Image 1: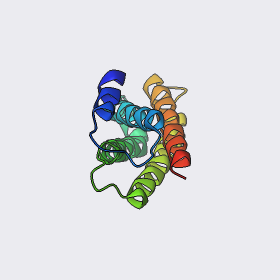
Image 2: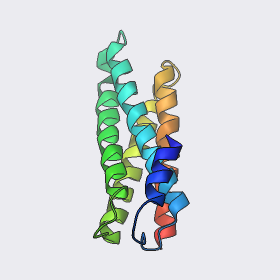
Image 3: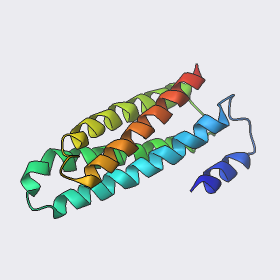
Image 4: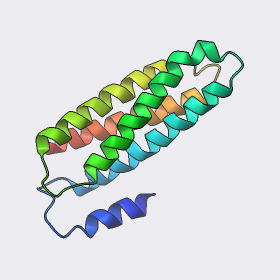
Length: 136
């Protein structure tokens, strides 16, 4: 997954407005990885015996997956770039990832998929924070 994101950003014909390409690449990669982890975690939760106890986890997973997917798409577009929209989207992604990580951690002792999802969410939140920091 690393190469396609980096390669696409390298082929962009215009200046990216001073955005740190390495931080941008990592953030796109982490948002896509987090979306996949959250989707898989939600699905695994639905397969558990006591699925009713995981209802909030499923909802949080799916919300986070959608927000991460949207964030990856916003970060992949640079024509007519608006830093305010990018900042707002990154902040929302951090919020969603932290909420999902906290919810999944509540179930991580019993469900390995929740532990893995929480880790992916924390990595994604950090990548978003790092990119936010590089935007100034």
